[in-house]
Image (cartoon, rainbow, N blue to C red; front, side, top):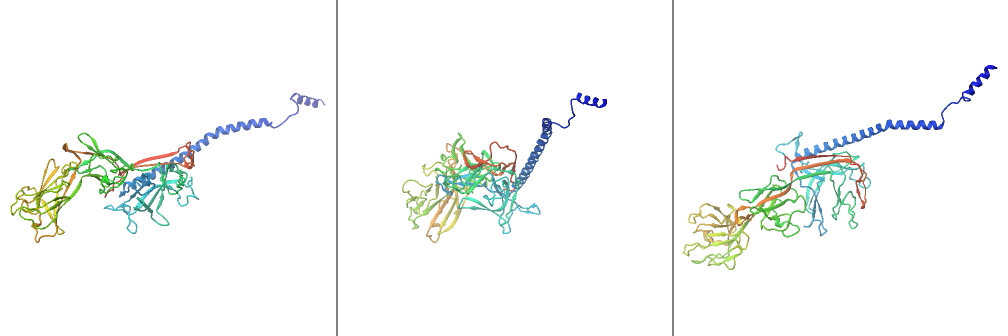
Length: 563
């Protein structure tokens, strides 16, 4: 068997019997290599997919934010009227809302305006406000709100119920008891409510929560007041990522009219403390005496400077008053007015005809003059009678002129009388008789129903003249009246330097105007809020959260405002 012997020898020479397969170690090595290879292959792919997803999310955020901002800007620009910035009234030191020391916190995260009516998509001409079926004016409100506000317990603030930009329509009425406007959404069970930003995964987070009951303000989101003694659920939310902020004008020098009684600004529709022009600064309810503005950062700040040395005579944010100026402002017209109309009464206290050389006894706004024309006591009125110099039988029994002295004999600060502001009328048995002003100052030539004004000392005094033989008097009327009064009215102002009477004061003002609205919207990815380390009942956005957000800003000029 020589062939068989040879085969075995070859087998032995090759290392024994033949084997097949891989060992466990070999398999593990191969698998490890494959994992590394697949990891190197798919890691960039996964990162790319994440970047695509993130990019798509940012594009969606950008599209949503820009589309919403464009709609907001367009609507506000065409608004017929923009209401004052909503104010959250908070209790002051007395702890009660609705009293004079209330704090007023502006809510820039909300805006209410009236849109113009449209026909076939076009604004009607002349512009008119939108109205409902009953003819009531419709208002539009933009604000941040939860997608579903109906059930905050069963459907709380979450990624599926975030804060979104909401557009609502309804009626906006003044609540005198609360001192705020109330917005009632129109539509009943199906209110006119539209969401302008995505309803899930994105958010306009709460910056501050304000308890309307006790006034506590916390940074972050709460559902119940954190004050243990309060526990109210009446919470207002402020959103720093959503802003409808009126343009703040600072240091504007107002333009005065010729008589320096009215000062106008470049923009009207002042925000903040509303005043139709009927409230004196001295009479505003508030802290200090005289009262001040400045309860809100929206309030106009009116500063009166003396032009000769730029001395501050009045600052509406301070209680000190060195001006004695009567000052009002019209917030809608954007104007400041100084001075006051002063009506004075001259009353004939006895209508018994006086004898020759005597006069009717009169009372000039508190100063009494007897039949000899002599005042009883010191001067306390700004009206001083001027009697005829002779005592002939045909001389009048009443003053032939009256001096207007705003200083009341030097006891009051100096004032200037506005030319053309003097008015005179006699009231006889309740019936008015108006006198007309004439430029003829010769008392023998003044008409029976006329008067002339002689201004002197840089308009700081005036003499109101009548006909020297027949001034306003009970003798002019027949039969003899039972009551007889003369009313002299004039306008005075103190916004000037008495040492240099021709130098009028300068008025500068800081104000917020609703004619220009600065708009801001920041949309960000939703992050689960976490308890504040300092107060577990307050939820805040995690400080280490990746702030994936998109911000857009714009400005709207209200074209139809004031029409």
